Every structure is written in C-alpha cells, then in structure tokens.
Image (cartoon, rainbow, N blue to C red; front, side):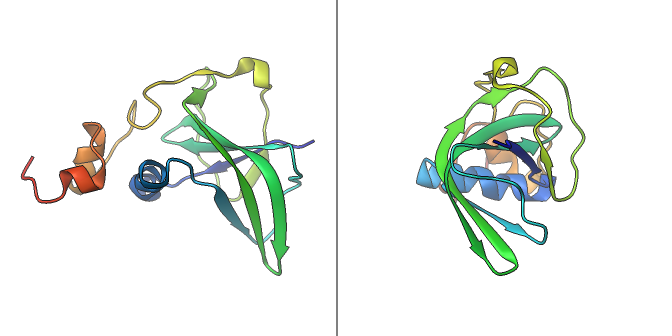
Length: 134
C-alpha cells in the first residue's frame, strides 16, 4: 500500500472547498502525468496552505491514458503536527495513520484567501455569500 499526498494550490483552495461543501464528499481526484502508486485501500491526502487538511479513502483507481482517476470516500478534518510546503505532482505519505489528528478548522485555519473568497474564511459557502456585501 502507498498512501499519497497532493497539493491543492492556494488559488484552487476555494474551489476545492466549495466542491466539498456542495457535494459533501469530493469523490474523485485526477492525476495527470506520472501515475501515482495508488491502489484500492490506500489514502489520498490533500495538502493546502502548509497543512494536511483532508483525505479520501481510495476504493477505485482508473487509468485513463495520461490521466489517472482516484475515486474514494471523503474524510475531512485530519492533519499532522508538522507544517509542509506545497509541491508539484504527488509524493508518498511520509507519516503514518497514527500521526493523524482531528482538525475541525480544516477549511479555514491558517488559510490565506483573496478578498473575493473571504466568505469562506467566515465559514460561509459561496452560495450563502452570493449577493451579500459582507
């Protein structure tokens, strides 16, 4: 088994969150280029703003030419103690499941958002914020 970590770029975090809120579980993640060593039963962890923030338990991996799609059940609000710089592509997880701790503020703690996405910093979904001047 090879658990994998990917970085969600700062600019992509609001979209990732809005998808999480809207669907209650982002069930897919697409890899382009080098195929990660994921198999069913592995974990795919998401790093954003220097923290591991959430994961999916992979239940299917679908190679599709230059694309690999991982499907899984979403698990929000987990992290590790260390801060981590983002990176391109994917890396094998360097931590164990025993090191994971709950992270209730996974969507917002330590997150820098541009002013246009400030509603997420206040715990609102984009649809709740639409039309308001707050």
